Length: 381
Ligand code: NAD
Ligand code: MG
Image (tube, rainbow, N blue to C red):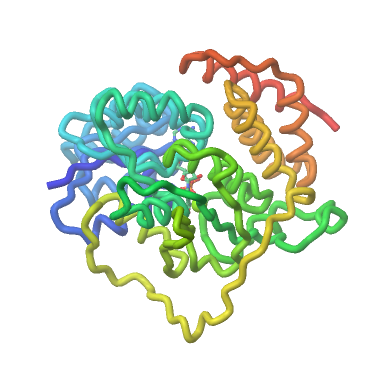
């Protein structure tokens, strides 16, 4: 019996993880967590009977306690609660599906407690890739990628132990503004940016997909997960999102994983690895999907991608600063405080104002994140 904990069970990945769980046998949800959507948390608690529910907000935790008084479920709150869910006794795999840097501490604690990680929360690897991978090695735990591209790469690596990776082909849909130039993006609204052509996801990652920052974060995620150099990762715009990514080996052979864009497939693989389990999710009909295309990304228009490369090449605490500034930039764009093109401008200004540390601990990364967020909140145009 696999026992899991889902951090961020009320989000897009969290709810899809529960859909996957419903289709699986021999899996038990021990703990779930949320932030503000207590109606959904209550529903999930009544359906999946976890032993623990963690609610970030204390007031919401009290309300939920009242509502679930008839259940044998412990309700906890705050960061301590999130960490308790991440380290809960008996759990073997923690699904990290919270959004943003908030996932850092619970992921670290989960690894220290010897849990395997089904990793959706890419911000954790972006900010602290080296520390996370070192800690995972030290505690002999596995990190199973949930992000569709990284799951595809992971799947393309199976059966190739000992063979060197020549290149990783990291595909990107290009988002809702693919093909547009800067002048055309000056006045786009949050609603325009939230209309993703292929994937239905949380707001933050949807905006990240529109700016191509998501792909930048994924380049960093791939570097850490698969221990490759930046130059070995090639981003390819593939608007149909059928080839989820690929690995090229030294003999020139390319192995890819394909499928309809459906996050439940990589989520399931992260939970059932190395087994493949039958499911009712949609299948590709190639006769209907005959036009698969590939193109280079436009890094001048979508500057966030080049900023991500800059952060990765510089290293140290700069990726954490890029990530923190991006979280604020996205939140400010969603509130209508800054324009779409000001997202990269805000991140770049924050990066320029920062002095990078090359030797750092988790505390330094949290500090860099807090510094970047405070700085990015104050920048005005
Ligand atoms: P979402 O916004 O739909 O859900 C976020 C979850 O985090 C919710 O459960 C929310 O309650 C929780 N949360 C938010 N703020 C919190 C806080 N301050 N404290 C505690 N909990 C908090 O996001 P999502 O789209 O499911 O994405 C989750 C993560 O997975 C992100 O890192 C994203 O980049 C990654 N990811 C998502 C997708 C996707 O298809 N949605 C694909 C690949 C990777
Ligand atoms: Mg992805």
